[in-house]
Image (cartoon, rainbow, N blue to C red; front, side):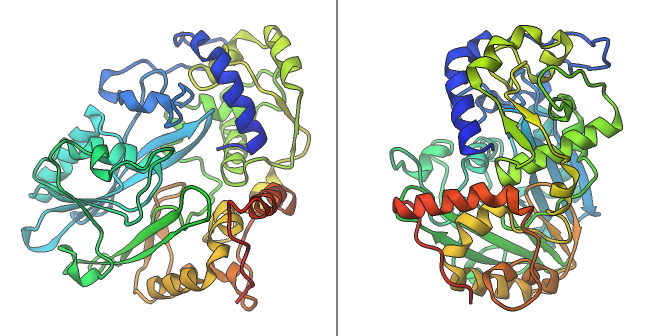
Length: 438
């Protein structure tokens, strides 16, 4: 979740220095508190950040889960933190109670820590029924990597996965990501054939396959009785408020609140919000135009000048001793953050690199989803429980059309990298060319 330049930089540094990370330390004079290790919050796979390198926020063995009731006795969400090299965002699972005692429907499970499973058992007790269906509605590894592990705790539940699953560099059977003997089916293209159809409608997008490796696909769900829409990655909303789950361990927020590697920051609400703005800019645009990237080797040589208490902000997620910060903020981040706001947002990476390759298929899917009479949207990332209608949802996809009001996409300087990457990958035939606006 960084620019290609910074991603390559950190990958190189991680290979050299990841093993030099230290254990968490006690509170410091700057008010920085390192949360205690808790065996109820451990998810062993998570410490590798789905990159085979220990660069995730849970490298020190902490993956907190927050339960929220969206509609009493009908809809619940479970939030955790997902991230790499201190660019962290909420990742969300949704649980829906089906009618007539048919059980619980769980979409995009999060990591099955002991705390998480205890919370699901709490939902089962409150709802008076067991988990019956588990759905994986994405091709992304960060969702697949937790769904298989989660399903192990619910042996009687049926598992359905997004059509178009793939693995790299070797194409492996999807069943290998799930407990041995677990029956795994694809989400039906025909929603009427799904066992949950009486309560929940759904519509499948994709898979959208580029000439190179990978693909994108997503299933949207509409829970009729609560008028709730579930999506995974297609829609988010950028809010000023820092999500509660991100504040559970605020060190990543404070890491990004610094203007340079040597600045000392205190844990204040203002600094948390500043760090959140910058974290969102990295997560959605990859390389904000407000930073100046520094020479890597020069930054490494100056690590000894980083205040000891500031190195604690990067422990477990940043290579070497947690102090590396090879850029400076040379512009105010607030205008660029504001450019991502103003309503529902299709993430810039999807706008610039993926959905604009097959706009007719995407808009047909968006039209179908927008026709449902929902009043709220639950995405898998960023803000939760978005009060929105089908009209709001459809407007977010106007970037594929010549007509209509333009949805937010971000500051032009921030999305320039994505435009450059789009051109480069198209020329190398990794991506199909951008299609004309409809």
